[in-house]
Amino acid sequence: MLLCVTHKRIYRDANGGSRLAEYCVETRDLRREYLNRNFFGKVKSRTNALSGLNISIKYGELFGIIGPNGAGKTTTIKILSTLLLPTSGSAFVLGMDVTHDLYRIRKRIGIVFGGERGLYNRVTGLQNLLYFSDLYGVPPSVSRKRVPELIEMVGLTGRENERVEKYSRGMKQRLHIARALVHDPELMFLDEPTIGLDPAGARDIRGIIKQLKKDGKSILLTTHYMFEADELCERIAVISKGNLVALDRPSGLKKQVRDITLVELHVYGDSRAVSSSISELPSVSRVFSEDSGDRTIIRIQTPDGSEVLEKAKVIASQNNVRIIESSIKEPTLEDAYLRMVEE
Ligand SMILES: Nc1ncnc2c1ncn2[C@@H]1O[C@H](COP(=O)(O)OP(=O)(O)O)[C@@H](O)[C@H]1O
Ligand SMILES: [Mg+2]
Image (tube, rainbow, N blue to C red; front, side):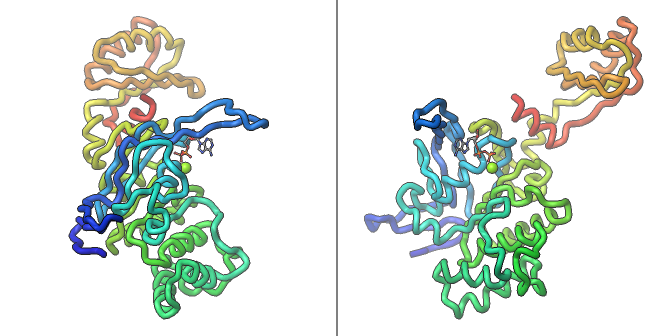
């Protein structure tokens, strides 16, 4: 069925025609609404979890979706992995329609959700992997070789004969990844795979994700950590409240906010008048104030850090407010992200 590789694949469609697919995932105006019902089943409100998402992921790409809680990341992954139907719009996975080709898609994707569920705790890691291999119809001659390789790859060699209930949270998550690979899928969906792990456990998972990419898997990763997306992903979609707010390479996202510098002032005294005068300066885009012990921290977003700092000093002295500390910070990707999702 597969006629050519090189990141473009031709598929036979149901009518015997062929379709050229450059992307392993393509969504068009994808929407999903949840109906929230009361005790009697009457719809009391609706949540627009996705409001028209358009993304395309290339074969072999490690693509990230980042957004705060409730942004619509899990909803997107559930639709793409055929666990949830869209309300409208379309989504194609490996050239197949998520609303029609459920079983054909499921055979060729691997899914990892953050959290504890989905493994059998009373049996060993090895038994879990053999069981799931069987469930996916992998011939025993193949799984006998593949399962030890997966155990090695996720760093569980030597622990595979222990019951899963004895595993740490990080080991369970590594076993989850191995479980998602038993049928050698070409596309992986990883939904916040490092959530709830300690820093060392999260670093191990990031190492495994890099290995998957090297092995040629296409990967869609969701996270709410910008540094993680920056470290791993070739392109990042930033979503907020079901809407795409940016889509670019990490370097491109940084460029979008290169002109937004953050001036930080630590002051004593009543700073409300100072904050409000600073916010009226023409080149200032935003001012945030935060009380911190005996001082107030005023953060000013502006494309023109040094000029605004000089003007802020004059304003402070006019209002008898003492500046104890001041600094000018260039924006990080995290700042870029926060600004995008806040707006
Ligand atoms: N089963 C559900 N019923 C009602 N609302 C839901 C359901 N699942 C998710 N939502 C809502 O949809 C929005 C998106 O959720 P989700 O896709 O889980 O976001 P994320 O994974 O980015 O945190 C949120 O507002 C969430 O409360
Ligand atoms: Mg989620």
